Length: 396
View: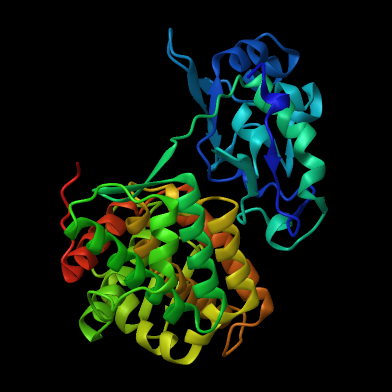
């Protein structure tokens, strides 16, 4: 990281952030602690205070020889949390905090263009647009990366499908195409249009025995794409809703052991104990939410969020391959509709309003990114779409 100051940081202009001391980032997480931070803390007066307060706790669980450990929790929260304040930050300064704490809510993605900087919408200040422009946080971010000795690596090639790759320029052409599709018209229609087009690209390259498509080949293809190798039909849509239902049921049980019947309740409506809302709630059938509130995936709030994760977080290259990530994106609006609809009902509203549309993005970011629960489901669904499109799934 000695060269970090020479690396270009690419920052969105429409994201703002200043800490509002809500304490949300200190709750429910598993906090990783580097050994050098552990040694620094264990030799401090704060450590003595903590040991007196929690005589039966190790404070930080770290095994001899390990480079990192885990912060203990108190009632599900970080043991360092005092009210809404971090005791390390208050008594020893920001540089004494674990790197993962200093980094939040920033998310960095290395690329040939530089480091793309995004921010977690799980942070209320980010999703509500409170604070200074994100660019003002770059000096602090650089210091954190230097202290953490963070190194960023990236592949020169991008895997479009299990057996097809492109270069960075080719990827950016596809990213721009997908972004245009979802921003111009109905979100879901545009998303499926881009999926079918990329499926056509993969199918044609595969049929020609090619495993690599450069930027010029991709640009030429997108100028006049052929008819897609499959059409969206009721069978695919039904499978999509069933998968989304299973995903929501997992989210509602992630703090507990598995309990049968939750998928049926999500699909058909009913009463259950919700991990997200931390109380027993009554819901309507999932298809009813989709029918009555399906238009909210075209809301400015949701489109802004999707655009952010595509361009700044580089979501499409965060999975095994771009096609898997792209088909996985089809679940985002469905999950968004369910949670925004239920949130509205909890607030006594028939239809989600701006507050629910914004706050639901925090739930989305926590579950789909920070907990990373669904890569295997995305992969299975994408394999099903590849099968429909006649695309071979063997990796090369």
